[in-house]
Length: 251
Image (cartoon, rainbow, N blue to C red):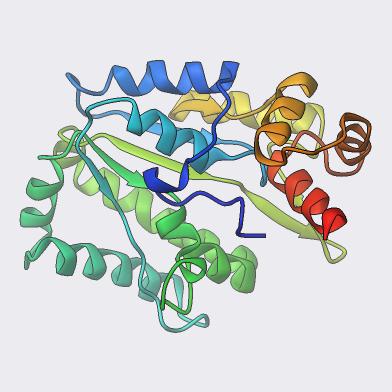
């Protein structure tokens, strides 16, 4: 599933401009001269949240710190994961205290928490990315978010000097099947997104059917439009899943 997955600016060799991208790019443009923004990029798995983020960054002159994650134990407690995150950033920035860490992060236009944090196990030697850890730990992982909220409340003055952009797909398991809370529950999903926008500046990556078809055709040159529509019925408007299925058909 990782062939069509984007984790850096260099990965974006093909990109189709959509309505969602324009909204995201406009949001990023506003970060050059402001601080204290927290932007949450949401969207169902397979919609290309990272692809949109990195393409937008490639078309701005923003100075970005891309957070990486280094977790060795998938059974680590939420507190251990939280501490590991800050230790990893401190080590990378070569600082010894949180005060120094926040000061260094404030020098960037934005701090990005994307695939190199969530899915680092796909891209290097790190055995466990955050998404892999949350899949294993389920609702127990919720305590990690409470720790993050507590950290924000304790260091609000520091966070006012930092722009944070993070992307995520929030997934839950029901009877062994994985669901995305932002797209799989109809009116409830819409309500959750409304609540989310109260606390964050949220940008949703989603597509029309025609946008999805054009994205897929850009990546799979010989893709048949009828077959794409069949896979849209199966996977929804999620180009990465459709591209992988079509590539398997062509083998």
